[in-house]
Image (tube, rainbow over all chains, first blue to last red; front, side):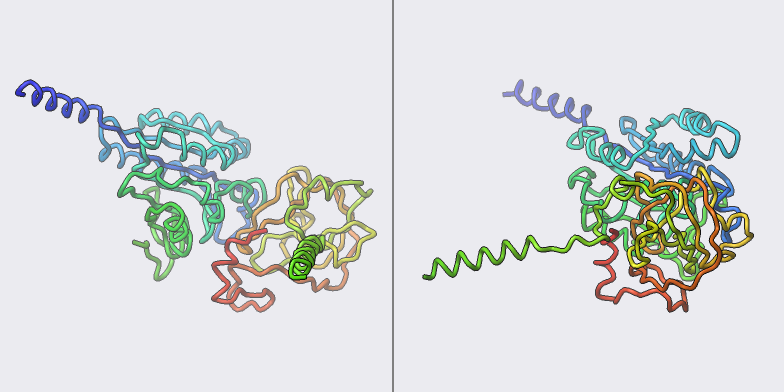
Length: 229
Length: 166
């Protein structure tokens, strides 16, 4: 009997040490092209790395809070950086890759929304490795995350995750109590509610606009702006 | 007799389902379909709408303006005419012969919250100013403050409209 208890104790200890890790995911959209934005007021993305620098700060925060075995993944929309690289005359992708290496995080590039959705749904076995947190840095309006914005086409988007497509995210991919936040403009006015409806997970979003120009995490820039709970 | 009515009713239902008009604005119309039998040139009219990013309306020369399509412009090969004129409104209601084709992807206009056709411009010839077309825009998600030129969604319909981007 005593032996059985010992066996049970060691089994529990072993299963605790093999406890499933979670995944933390940060998504960065791409910058606009200056040739479209230069004449606009307000203008977007004077600095190409708005969604890289802010994501980097969040990734550092997560590094401090995540468990040793938890995965930390940075998913970045590539085509906008490729096109902005041509405009800037410098290789921005290698700068993003260097940043990921410096932060010690896994970097995954994506070119189409389907690739991002597939990663969220089944990039890991979500029973064993659910998503503990999801952060989005990029252009958005109340109904859409625009990974491409004012890049392929002046002030429009060709690659995005619209609320109407959120149903493609499988229920159950998030860990219980998962935290999600959209750092883009206006997400709290509709996107957050729709995200919760379709995934069952709360998403913090902004009522009003957000501003990335401080070089820190984006701040609310509209009068009466606030983050949703 | 009862069965005859039932069958007749079912037939009516099936025929009714099959008579949905084939609207030119049907959402699944592809660039390949739009580009089929390409004309020598397209006719375009530049219309600037406050805060919207659309370029204007495009049609085949033989079509009526009622059949024109509201387009975004892909400017990798050729910049829009207004770029060299100093302002977005400089060529308001100008007509152009447009050379190019519809791009394979549709584009999302964020103020309208709509997917629109994208015309890939290769070159153009100005035909000068014409009168206003007065064509109806789809419902706009974010109407510019104080602007009455766009139709607004009702409060009840607003969230349903957000999902309807085609």
